[in-house]
Amino acid sequence: GQNIDQPTEMTATEGAIVQINCTYQTSGFNGLFWYQQHAGEAPTFLSYNVLDGLEEKGRFSSFLSRSKGYSYLLLKELQMKDSASYLCAVRDGRGSYIPTFGRGTSLIVHP
Amino acid sequence: DAGVIQSPRHEVTEMGQEVTLRCKPISGHNSLFWYRQTMMRGLELLIYFNNNVPIDDSGMPEDRFSAKMPNASFSTLKIQPSEPRDSAVYFCASSLLVVGDWTPGSSYNEQFFGPGTRLTVL
Image (cartoon, rainbow over all chains, first blue to last red; front, side, top):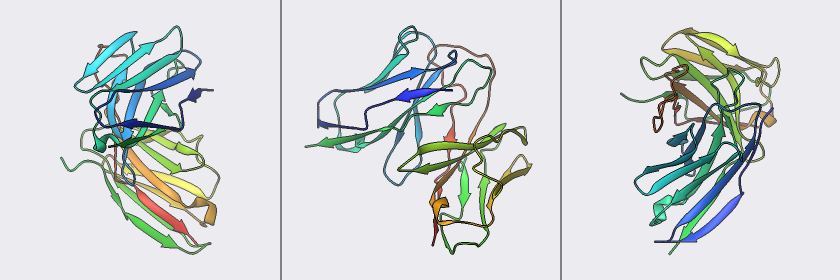
């Protein structure tokens, strides 16, 4: 099976930087996704990591360390609209291409 | 493209009634997923279709739940009989599953989610 851990909730200030961590334990590894979900809406794709290192995409970056079973999502220059839930999803290495989602981290950005 | 389309957006029903949720995936996608999301359990995969064939239904809670995909552009999730504990938001998602493509920085196999159906069983 899979075990994916994320903090339940985080708060940050507008304009600041926040790092949301995700640790996982899987039987093998086949890629890690980050999704953003605003309240009452569907999850939307943010990033995908399959090799170690940092992937940067505008204000958002995602990092992966396969040996440590660890990823983080870095959000820079926070805006109020970044208040949302951030879901970490991992695919294991058993030939399945279906990701398993973590419970999500609720980020609250305040002025 | 209109994205993944789900109907209805909201459904309120009484315990024991049959509920049918509908999904139209993005044209050209070969994989379709049904998820259920609750505060207690988060986002759970119910069933996954590839090329209209059910591949993994291990997440389907029990025999009261069934899903079909008669063609590439339509899927249904049926609950019969419904129970209050089925109250949740049900999401349909689709993707173009590309096996074995490891290009760094790519977004292969990204899932596109529909707006969801909020189901309340009284």
